[in-house]
Every structure is written in structure tokens, then in C-alpha cells.
Image (cartoon, rainbow, N blue to C red):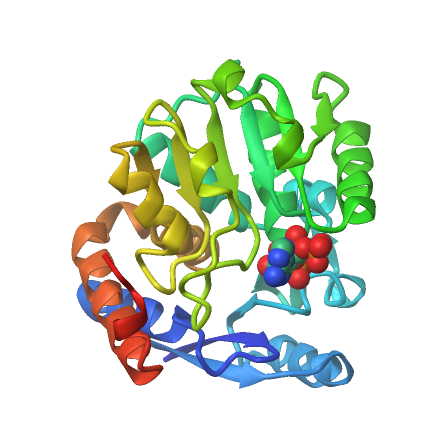
Length: 295
Ligand code: ATR
């Protein structure tokens, strides 16, 4: 039996074990997937378990996506540019670091037929998630990018980082009150912050009066499934996408790396998504948040 895990801190509420175990069952794969609570200091222990084949691969979540890098033998090109590793594979005792977050976002865009070539995008947030999203946008010849973040300094760092790799990409740092929404009527808006995540289900990362029906709105938050931003987008009939497809596709990309074959093509993703929606709903109910969601 192959053994996989997600490491991070905190990690107890990660959806990844349920997601991967559902896929293993669906495809009849003899493997399990667990969560491992891990601090930066405990990384060497995990590395030992990978090198000795006690673990056959791992995903990495917050806050370890950068601190794991010095322990690895080979870092893939995309992970290197993004500066974050969320998946490790093992071959002949060597550890390979990958980034599948950007693939998750890219696949979600493709499957939803969301065009980004030449399109103006507003990216909200400047943390690790925004970094992978910007990478995908830059790889797809996006139009103008406006980066909005609570802490301007972090936005400036991310702008510098992205522009240093992509000379054709120009990022403007903006504030909501300065942006003329009428000029941006075909814009793609992507929330890459944790604003609106459980249990703060009534927080919205974008001023609601900014949204137009012609906008395409993507929230990378998937718990709750229908965030305040998602609900605001739907209420004006804008094309709106939850963070769940991105989560699913980054996981499937990890499976393809570990098993070295196109596992993801065989997965019945709509069944998987419905299953995960039920898990998320149960989690919401446990937080007694149901009565806070007003529509
Ligand atoms: P991740 O790797 O998931 O992106 P992160 O690096 O901690 O996590 O980044 C979280 C993002 O959410 C940041 O853009 C953060 O803004 P700051 O850079 O100003 O910290 C944003 N964020 C988190 N809580 C927020 C809040 N209450 N209001 C506005 N932005 C918030």
C-alpha cells in the first residue's frame, strides 16, 4: 500500500485526505492519505520518512510551502519561479519539489472556459495563493493586472517578484476607491485572500458595489462553498467560480505526479465535487454558521 499525507500547521481541517481517499476508492487504488501536523522544526523528520519510503509522496500546506525547499534535491521549474512547493515526489530516494497550485488554477480556468488572454484582471491578495495565481495569469498572456492588497508592501514585493520573471507583465498596485469600475467592465476579479473563509462567512474581500454582471468573479476560498463574494456575484448574474475546482485540480495534478500516469483523466470529478460539497456543508454546520448565511 502506498502512503501519502499533507503536512502543515494547522492541518486538522484539511479537505485533502477526504478528497484523495475518495479518488483512491473511485479508482480502486491501494493507498491511504493522512494529515500530519508539522512545524518548521519537524520538517527533517518528514524528510527522513520520505527518503526511507515510509511515505511515498506528500502535499505541503501553510506555512511550510517555502521552508520545505532547502530540504529537497530537485525543484521543478514552475515551483522554482513561484517560490513555493506544495507537492513532493520521491524517485530512487531523491526528493522532487513541485507546485501544482498554479496547475489547479489553470485547469479550473480551462474547464470553465474562462478566457484570460488580453483580459484585465484584478488580483486581491499578495500571499502564497496570489503568487501561484499571478504565475498562471502571466503564463497565459493576461492583459493588465491590478493588484489590491491590505498591506501595500507585500503587494510591492509580489509585483517585483512576478515582473522579474515575466518582462511582458505589468502590474499596477491599486486601491478599490481609485479603480473606475465602469472602465473595467470585462474584468476578471480573483480573490486570493482568506477573507470570507469559515467562520467569517459574511466578510467580503471586494466592495459589493464594485461588482458588475459583466465581471467574472473567482474566489479561491472553498469553505464555505458559497462565500459572501460568490453569493454577491451570483446575485447579479455575474459568472462566478468557487475555489473548490482549483483545490480538486491541484490534488489531481499531485496524483499524476506520484503515480506517473494520467490518473486525473479517469476521475469522475463532478461526483468528487458533490462529495466534497457535502463535507464542507457538514463543517459549516459544525461551526453553527448556517444561520449567518443570509441568501
Ligand atoms: P496564502 O498563502 O494562503 O495566500 P498568506 O500568505 O497568509 O496566505 O496571505 C493571506 C492573504 O490574505 C494576504 O494577502 C493578506 O493580506 P496582508 O498581506 O495584508 O496580510 C490577506 N488577508 C488576510 N486576512 C485579511 C483581512 N482580514 N483583510 C484583508 N486582507 C486579508
